[in-house]
Image: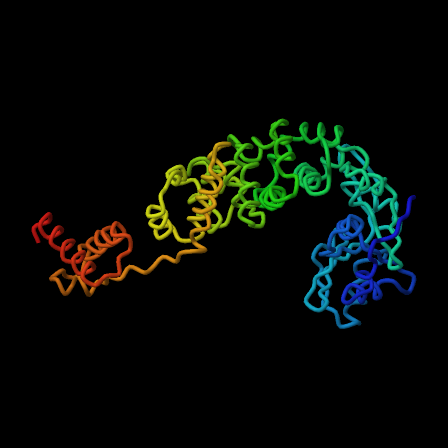
Length: 417
């Protein structure tokens, strides 16, 4: 075993985490923070969600919580997991586990009190660390050395770890993109490539959640390229991927000062036309809002290249701010190395400088000119709106009257009303 000290152990004793650990660290039982919180502290990153492992059985965890007036939910009792909600913050509390019998690629698991056995059942060495309330980090699997080397490795046999849950293939690339440096660990990479068929058995919802985290990780571009080289992206997305535009999108976001946007990056990676968007929405079971946004990105984005300001304003009016900006950023990312960054930036930031006015003509204006209610009225308003856009959004009353008069006259003449 190797030990180290947390950079800032205060989060272990600060409320409400300190209250949970105090509740479980007494009367012969021990609890520690495990996994991502420990890893992130040692890397100097902010600690977010805190997961806790304990020697106490799930029933004892629930009994103590209820006695202390803490809400306890048996979210995974068969796996030893209880969720405690303290001051509105959830904590997953999981009883230590160990393999008591192995057969084939699976294992029979029992609750235990052995921190070493529990650590060896986890996925990656840098996630196998635990921290006791005194701020001491306990490492039974080589996680500290791997963390120092920015290396992501499976604990034990990679193929066995993956067979326990094929989602670990995607998690490997996501964790490597977030915490690793250099080439992926060779043994882990080959095991992931060999597990391609297993990845295809995962639910779309689980793949979606992992992939949307991966694409916004700091080294997502290299991780995605490694996945593509191993045939894994084809398995996940079912089509061609575009790594040049994906990398360019990172530069576009940086140029505009925008935070990473998972759906926009997914569009750059995999959407060239609307058919791509629909395929991906189905394969990943995207929400209706996500599917519509991705579909909009793929709709004639190439028409935005070379626009002058008047055309850009009309596009912004038609599309709305979000769809306009998405499509501009995708077109910029696909424009290639000769893209005029200054011009593209001006187009992308147009919504910050100009707000589209509302169409000033109403149904009443057309009714006053002899058009009755019905389908013709809506059609005439659409034609009048097109003429108003061509006038560059005029607000001159005389010009607006002329647009209304001319539109009604033309429609009446053409349809012999």
